[in-house]
Length: 178
Image (cartoon, rainbow, N blue to C red):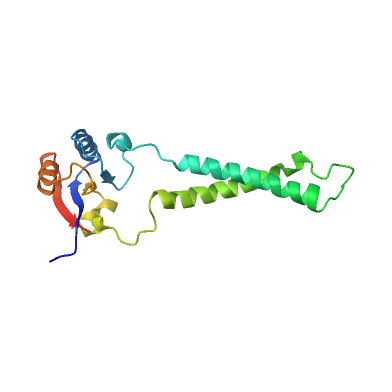
């Protein structure tokens, strides 16, 4: 008895137009756990797959705002409260002089938010993925386009999904185990 479970089904397509139209047909047929694997971005693929907008922008904005607040708090504490120094008769905490450091902290935390937010949203690092078991997946970095339907999709049925992908032009349609 095997301990493996079905991960999903992957089909190969030969052109950007073919995978785009296949993605439209698959989502129109009611599948929701669908993904496209292509050697370059295919314009409109997100819309064809009915994928929601990425939340990465909100993560970056929140991290940038946190950087602004932390920089201002840090400089207020250091200059106006903890170690007050009057320089040239100016107030210890002169707001305009804090702008460069505030900008730098905003950019720094926004950058960290973008990188680590991308890792989190993409569930990385993942050292192994079941899609690498497909016999021709190595061509995805060169000249082939792949469409995958995960077994967690409510409409997924091994044989019906495989037949459907073949009927819309999928080649090398394979059922992959996790």
